[in-house]
Length: 404
Image (cartoon, rainbow, N blue to C red; front, side, top):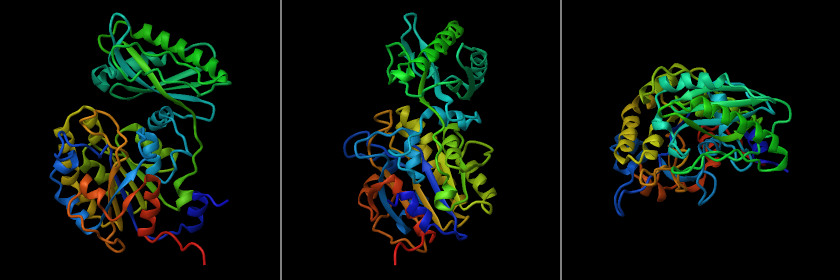
């Protein structure tokens, strides 16, 4: 049976055209009140609006209708990997993103510092978004903790986040998260989803007990949660499937991690502004033909529930966009991995706005602005995120004809 990747390998061809996939994390939003604009619609985006008028709009479904996606599966979909077929846990993404090696059989988890009250209940799931300068020494202390049955490596990621990797014989990643996704309740214990993972669950629970004792006197980061237990998924590379020389430009380690797992070269970025990320693309323009650019603040501001700050984050990208379009990519797509409406303060199931600009091959629709309502009526329609990359390849004339 011919699979999707078999077909891509058969049809993929190489040329000199450049493709840019610009992902504003959590781009999709909701009006603050019925009838009002979303964050994207409220933002002043003359450059994106021009691209919308010259291109075509649509909406993507990251995983399935009604399904709220995590960042890992949402990005895999955009890279052409069916997120229901290729399962990657958050832990391995965080670990690989900060350069920790995760071999098959190793178990990685994403850690969050949190704040506990005197009764051990969570009062802040992110420890007040503790600064990296304060969090890194705490992770160094945790890295010295060891328990019988495995070696454990801890590495700081950013702010309240860290990565944890356990190595040893017979470990099993089929474990439940300890983050209850709520305040006013204690962290959950690590629970095995099946009998074979019971020993691994016990191992992590012993480490958590030692870590919590180590942090007990900290004013804010006096507790922790673990989530996304996972191991190396052995993904086929984008180069082998799609014939690309792909590069990633991302500030946050998790997105660098998912990019490494699919074989992208991760480029260095000097700074965290959109201008800085676009400059990294410019520096590598001649050595790669596919660029994934990740913008984080749109998602962070949405999770903070700050509508106006998310609007400003979108406007900051638009303000810098000329330095990217001046490179004259053959194909430019602007979208999100999922929706993060400020009104909900979380990821959501809503379709994600999608803009395709490909001057030589696109069929422009009637849109004149880039926003949710325009995308819902756009000429590209509503389609699975895993179909994004084949469309970008087609518009770059990098796919052969199928069949006689």
